[in-house]
Amino acid sequence: MSINDSAEDIYAQSFNAVDFSKIKVGIKTLDDAIVNLGELKKINPRLADKKEVLRAINNGDYETMRDISNFFYKTSGIYNRLCRYMAYLYRYDWLITPYINSDNLKPEKVLDGFNKALMYLDNFEAKRFFGEVALKVIKNGCYYGYLIPQKDRMVIQELPPKYCRSRFSVNGRPAVEFNMKFFDEAFRDTTQKIKMLNLFPTEFKKAYILYKEGKLKADFAGDTSGWYLLSIDNVIKFNLNGDDFPAFISVIPAIIDLDAAQELDRKKMQQKLLKIIIQKMPVDKNGDLVFDVEEAQQLHNNAVKMLGKAIGIDVLTTFADVEVADMADKSSTTTVDELEKVERTVYNEAGVSQMQFNTDGNIALEKSILNDEASMYNLLIQFEGFLNTLLKPFNKNPKKVYYKAQILTTTIYNYKEMAKLYKEQTQLGYSKMLPQIALGQSQSSILANAYFENDVLDLVNLFIPPLMSSTMNVEALSQAKTAEDGEEKKAGRKEKADDEKSEKTMKNIESQG
Image (cartoon, rainbow, N blue to C red; front, side, top):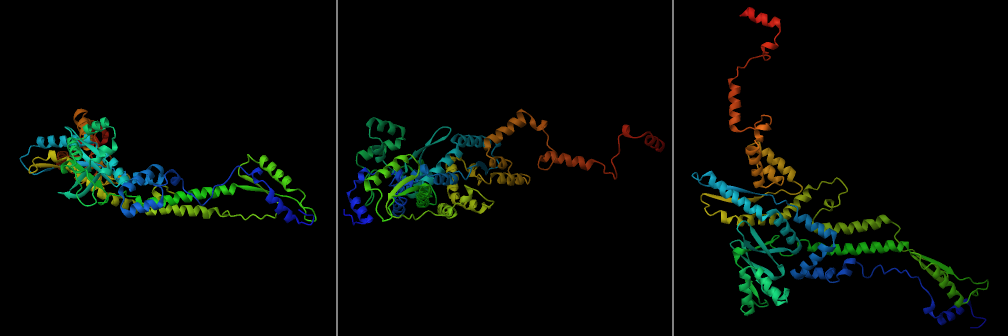
């Protein structure tokens, strides 16, 4: 270093000689705002990867799609809400109607079968079952079950979709195959495996023995061994429109984009809080350094030490002129709109109105809800067919009488309106049970309440409603009509009783007599 060296040369030479390991830096750093965005991806890099989701959809990889769907059901509030909304949209209100085909059938016989059928479905808890199955169909794409008849109810053994498949139907019912590898892969311990086999129906035990003997071979090229065709009458399968993939799997890539956009927004907000203190080392009038590099280093370290616990503040020490370019977005409205645009994309992919979950206006949602009802109606029809399958033991003599189940189209949005419509139909002579069923009561509870209140408590004679055509039976109407016809119709005001008449009036009547 010579006396003729400029300040820049001196700084450059000293800069190369500085031990940077001794220079302190700020202890609070900001992660890169572009790389590795998305909290969900950090939790599970495989299932939360957009490329993996699109690959599974394109290849029809049902197993991976189910894993992805269940992961997002647990971690994404939007996806969870979408699944539960669609699954619980319908209320699954049902009723049984006896179809009587014989004039000689005694009413007691009809009522006996009707009561048994009602109790059977009541014990089955059809509403709860259909809600749970609908949610699993939405999440997993399908539901497989094995029927285990009991004396007073039906019990359903759920089967894991990973080990089930259905390639064809028989008489309108799906033929379900179950892979016996399930017991070897799910239960490694022999004792536990035997316990689980004993919990399953007998058909599974027989099939597992065939599998261990090597008799369950592959059916076609590329197929795996271990598949066993279960009895058609003992199995059920539900899905939406014949497809086994999760209903909202195509929404997940948009949810991944939303998660990344939200984290980017958080990083931008964090970046706005950061401040850099720039201390510029002075030079004299000749441009020479006032402090040498070691002294500047010590001044820098002192500033870092003093501000070490300050939030969002770093220190820069320099001999050069510094200009800071602010990259922050000055318009908060633009940032908010970008996030809302990404969020709207999620609901657009789902085909569900965002207003149903975050209402901030008076926009009518009837058309959107009707579309959602239509999307789930196919599953509702499958449930109705299943209820009628359960009623087969009660229809042993269909030429005389048979019982048929029906599921109403009542939803969480329209059930009050439907109840009013059914009530109006009641005034025309239609079913008196439908209004109460639409409000959530079962047929058995309606009949039990009516019998208890009318025959036991005799409330029909204690609480008498105003006489109207809708509240009077045929006999009462006939009596009222007869009484009306027997009365002598007179013009003018009704005559007062004798004790209410004045003395002058009574004298006039007597004089006329």
